[in-house]
Length: 278
Image 1 (cartoon, rainbow, N blue to C red):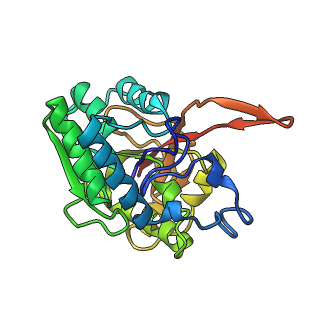
Image 2: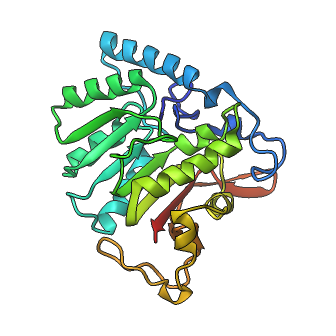
């Protein structure tokens, strides 16, 4: 899912993973009309992308680029180190693509990491790269995150760099698929676990709105927690009081990202947020 971007500048999107700036044009707001449908939101597109990437790696040894750039990956790694996430914590890379993030996590000493992607070619590519790097303690699975198997659960940290973006561009019921994504995340992420998301299509406020929508079942129970219990301990840290509590997730931190100015207006090139499951 997390994928190479068009051209070597890698400003595009990830398979099951994210849409680049060009895909930001929409018909209305995300909550109303959503993003304009695109082939970038389809499995067929990313299967074709990763088949080419796999062939390129096999022929030339080119591992491809880092989705959203190296700094976007380093930002997440720095956060994990800053908050002293234990090296044996279970970490899930949602839409791993070429597995670049998995490689760096393993090099930092993380020993319980899993990468999933709905493209078999992506998993084959990431497996080949990991083998070339001589790394172990990395699990790879062909998995559709919208319909995760029951054994995919209890993770301490889940990371998304572009997968939610891609789902938002799916021509076939993107709004419903976004709801499926949030429900799947609730099942996969353990209580008090962290969800790190980077998006180039959604703003911070839009992401907060997406994760505020009504849920059922286990998510409803989370919303009924006494508001006085907002100081929930995490792996090795306690979040700030007064954080926004959203469908079993509360906003833990907004990570700083590069800013740009155009036409007298300014904004961020990507949004990067950390949620904690309550």
